[in-house]
Image (cartoon, rainbow, N blue to C red; front, side):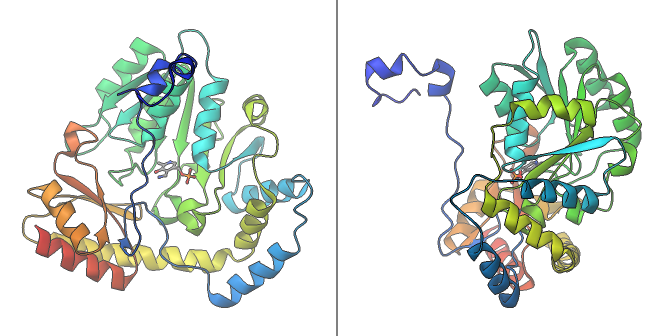
Length: 360
Ligand code: PMP
């Protein structure tokens, strides 16, 4: 409901649909085993953290971000093996890039389409921009519904189609043949969102170059820098040049880019952490699979979707045992009684499993 504490003269100034919205809620995680937001549980090794501290200590904070931001763009392009003829733009997290895209593509009659359940920001960016959002339900086993996707594309002619690869919260990759059909049918842009690429068995990076209307988005959040806020988007040069005009100047702080550059210099440390999490994911999937009453789905991300008999009860039981996961069961009818579990350290995963079993 609209906030009744806002004085009437201010109430008229704020859009009615925004007053009716709920703010993005971050769950209170103090003192909890935090497995709700797909963060990398590993901090930087102490020696590297100290070295980074030195680096940040030398950064000039009195100046606006400078050309060093271009060093980061080059380092990311190299890291991602960006195709020839492509360019890369930076966002304060990929959340910002999703908002900027909606702004840039706000043409009359424009719409944004994505499969559901999916990442909430796609719909939110459309709503905030006053664009129509078309959510196309996945099949009950969380695959793309090819016929429904193609029909919705033909009917709505969306300006942007988002395909998270792998998807959040279902953690799976899509059938490549279906993706190709969607790309070929799309009248507008197709954004492959590879936020979970560090844990994925596949990437679309090698296949985007042949298309003029496909963008690929990534983030350093799941890589291990969720606190730094650094997302990037790659696409054909001329297209990125237009979208980049919407970006606020200096959207990447001097501290953000210095941290990101440092992390890329030590990419092997982060790669080892990702590998460890992939190994933990397999252990966790085995254990969950052997737990009576729990249904699991395959995962190419650092999260596992499970279905339990009573998600609200299990979620509360786990929370009482100081383990925080995400109850996604109200997000979409297909997610009835589903919880999303982030893969943590071996120790965190054991605590999580124990709490889950006791709370079923
Ligand atoms: N895309 C997907 C699919 C996500 O799940 C998330 C974060 N949960 C993001 C993008 C946003 O990531 P960030 O803003 O931290 O870069």
